[in-house]
Structures are given as C-alpha cells and as structure tokens.
Image (cartoon, rainbow, N blue to C red; front, side, top):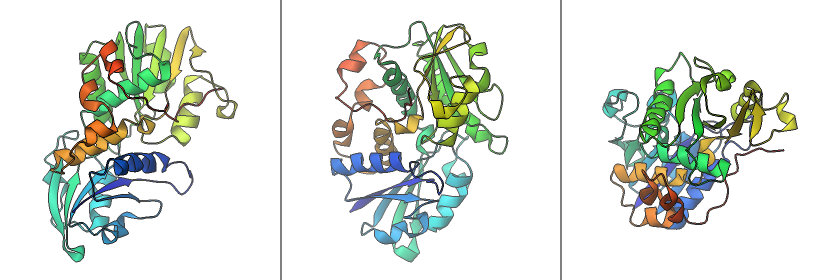
Length: 309
C-alpha cells in the first residue's frame, strides 16, 4: 500500500487558508492511485506529528505544499515526522532543486519518501501560466502582456527569492510574454511599484503563494493601488498609472496544483498510474504556448482566488 500526505502550513487566523490543501487532496483522492491520501498541517489539525500514525500504508510519500525550501521544509516537517537520519544536505539542493529522500520513521514502522516543496517543481511554471490564462480568460495570453511573478521575499531565507526567480527565468525563456519580471513584498524590486517595471499596458500579476490570505487579499492589492481599501474590492483588470493590472490571486488555488503534487510523488517513485490523465493536462500543456494548450484542457471550474467587485 502507498499513501500520500499533503503537508501544508494552515492558519489559526484564516479559516480559508487550508481550503486549497483540501481541494487538491480531494482531487488526488478521486483518482484512486493512492491507497490513502491525508492532509496535515502545522497550524491546524490534523498535525504533522500525528499524521503518520493515521496511515495503514508502509510506503508514505510526503509532499510539502510550500513554495520554497527553508525553515518549514528543512526543519519543522522532518522533525515532526521524526524522520531518522534527516539533514537538509540529504536533498543535495541549490535551493530550488530538491527532489526527494527516502528515510525510515521507525516509531511508526513506515518508509517515508520526503519530497521537495511543490513551489520549486518545474511544473509550477506551467501553473503560473495557467493562472495568467484563468484571470484573463484568454488561453493564448502572452502577446502584448507583461507577467509579474510575485513572492514574499525575506532576508531570513534566500531560497524564498530563488524559487520566484527560478520560475520567472523559465517562463521568460519561453518567449511567450513580452516582459516577465520577479517582484517581492519584502525585498527589492517591490510589487508596490509594479507599473514602474513594465512598458506593457497590460500586466498580469500572479502571487506565488499557496493560499489566499492577508498578503494576497489585503496587502498586495492595496500596495499596487488596485484599491484604497481591500474591503471595497477591486476590478480585474484595474487601471493603475496608465496600465491595466490583471491581479490573479494566489497561484496555489489553481486546480493544476494537484497535478504538481502527484508529479512530486511520482518523481519520488510512487506508482501514479493514470493520475495525470485523470487529473488534467500537465503533460499535454507543458511548454505549449498557443491554441493547442487550451484545446487539450478539460473543463475545470474557475479558480477561487480572484476577488472582484
């Protein structure tokens, strides 16, 4: 038997923070490729510490629903899972290249395949582009548009910016959007000045966050000038300093994130069978930039992260 654990932060303050985690886990559960699928959180129940005890499977694939390698993925989750022999060097990563490591959790008699965070997986570049398509309603969006990939950024974790810049570079290399730039909340270049960094009139802004919350629904919209008060909402697109800003909300709410979670587990050796076919279109979409990308897409509900007036 094999199990998948989706490990996320959760929140004591925002009851909606865990919604994407449950939605993605449900989507994977419906594929039937894992005998068990569990959600686990740091700030909510069920907690990281107990989750392994709830599983019957001996083989457990743990995929952190986090954006970057750092404190939670390198310290908190392995410690709470009681992974024997864990050290961040086990991933042999440059900050964006962690794949997986297999370690025992002997107190619960499990073999744990501990994966890198979803945020640094190559497929996340496709999810960011998907998010741009969703918010504009245009499967071919790119020509004449700029794309801003926004991260939190922090001097305490250099890897936070690395993940944003990694995907920004990959999308820029596809030559789909006229301009692609990485912007941040807490370090330069800051998202507050988004219109200063783009010549394009139309700019899609995609926050590389797991869930919508205080930062994506209050700070960033106000900082960019979409609205004087987040409680009033904002238009999509919104006119700011001669530009039209298409604000997408957190990328983690995009349904395609479930595909990335499965890809992470598959890369670590999980038997994912036809999960890719049943979930969606990641394989068919990857690298596509034109109409074919939309034609291969199943009918999926719009993402819930957009907040419009």
